[in-house]
Amino acid sequence: MDKTRPTILIVDDTPDNIMLLSSLLKEQYNTKVATNGATALQILQNTPEVDMVLLDVMMPEMDGYEVCRCIKADPRTSDIPVLFLTAKSQPEDEARGLGIGAVDYLIKPVSPPILFARVSTHLTLREARKVLADQNRNLEALVAERTSQIMRVQDATIMAMATMAETRDNETGNHIRRTQNYVKALAEKLKGHPRFADELTDENIHLLYKSAPLHDIGKVGIPDRILHKPGPLDRDEFEIMKLHAEYGGDTIRQVEKHLGGTNSFLTYAREIAQSHQEKWDGSGYPQNLCGDAIPLSARLMAIADVYDALISKRVYKPAYSHEEALGIMRKGRATHFDPDMLDAFFEIEARFAQIAQEFRDAEEEV
Image (cartoon, rainbow, N blue to C red):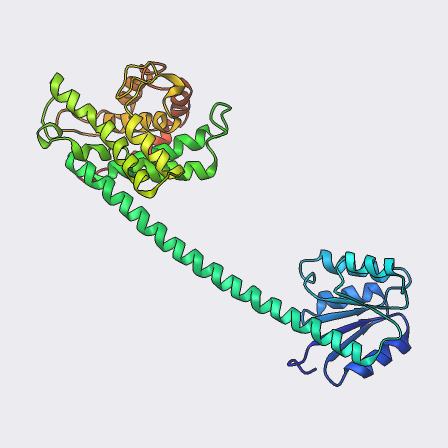
């Protein structure tokens, strides 16, 4: 068999027809033959190099229409062009053949020049489709790689911006890593909850994970004397500190304005930056939102941020143990925190402790 030539499978229950077609085609093509539909399908399964099927319609047991349906239903053979060669000449017969996936319908006795022309045309079209499919796959791979590069740059930029804000506050990049992983873990726990299932899709959870590091970006606007104060803030200082939430929301809004619109990532980033200090009972800031008026993303971030603040050492306080932090947070149910979210937090509190250990600060490592 010459592998440089196309291979055509001839299917006909009449030996004389097979001999005639084989003799006509053998000078230009490799040929295989089958005298029934079952044998034809077996050949196609075992011979991946078949490029075309010339198929009789009127055969016993399995007619050509059924054979064609099987060919087109199998992903391994569905792209092989099928040409019907038949004595059935009624328009409805031709329409039926084309309707189940055949590319052509020739009436017997077939004129050799017409047969050669149709075979050549459909083989050329098949090769063109294969080339186009290869080009599309290459293009998709290139687009995927470029998209991946852009996403890596975006992620690095986000992390750099978030780290800049945290560094000014004498915190570490590990705080960013911990809180974004807390948010992801809590969101995944809640995605089956009827209150949250519609919003907490896998795609949105990924966006929450990516946007969480920007929660304190507004701290870049807070003076160092307040950020670095080694003790509790007085009333006036605290009022200035509270502005970081507004600054964070305004920063993301400026990005949206520059882009001429928003997207889910920026929406989550803005919600988290502006509203993560709101409290369930309305006593938080900057807008005194309460209950479900607080964006879901910000309610998740509130639990993540408070837990991490409690277990982390600060210039004005020691680090609390995991158990001590749980005790404090439990008191915030339905006052500081969404009660359903806090209940979910307690169900996976061991996962929070694991994340805290995995991304612990360098000075805590032994």
